[in-house]
Length: 356
Image (cartoon, rainbow, N blue to C red; front, side, top):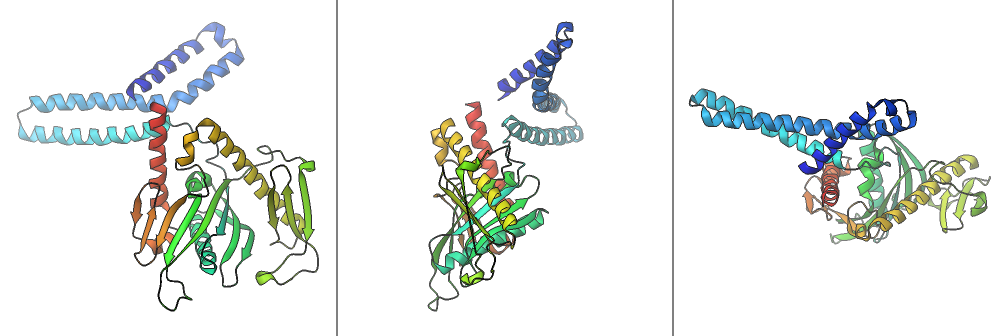
């Protein structure tokens, strides 16, 4: 890693010298090109220089520790060495993060789709628990939560719920939540006290703007129909529900929560753009490397990523083998310990690939 950092520092100095040449200074386009590259290296080079300075201070302190004979002075030098070691470790972590290429989607808002899987009514209740978990997490981070579409089950759960989370870094925090979530608990309707296993799927999609995804009118089929209320009863006499079908891909989006046909269409278009954007990103990921299918962060929906075990007060993330024993807190939105662990693991993997 140090060799890589030195080469980046050399390139930084080379760019600085190049920008100082008169013939370059008079060429605006060339100057801008060099300035952009130099700016992209500035943070990592600054960290590397601070690391080298700290490392040199540590070597000096270590040499001094070998020479001094006064116990009080030796104790002081040892404390200084410990401080410098801690500083070097912190700079190393910052350097590793800086070496990773930024994900341009990280600052995007997200659209989250939670669907009941196997387990009948219990799966629908679990889907509702996951929606509440993400909503509480969003509230703690001062993000805006907006339900775009929902289909409720008969006992307070969801067959499907689609919602948007708006806030800085929403995608960077939630992008590893995509996959199959499994719950093990005794349902309220279980008279024998037997533990049931149910699942729900989560898809986290970066919100896509019109500039990100172009949808041609001729590729879109729009159906308008009467919205249904909770439980299936018809609650509106005016047709306001909207179903969009993207003909080339077969993707279908339905929104009916709003009483305005226009609002339902806007929401449906937002979901459709996000799905198309995610589809294209997934295709590009598969083209970059076939091995990403088995890695954290691929967005593969079929992979079981996490188990929530109520009797044991246990949450296990199967991708990194991490188990925590704070199930009530996690379901109340305390997701950071899990998210941080999965994110750190993925960053380490990406760094290893980059330095290989």
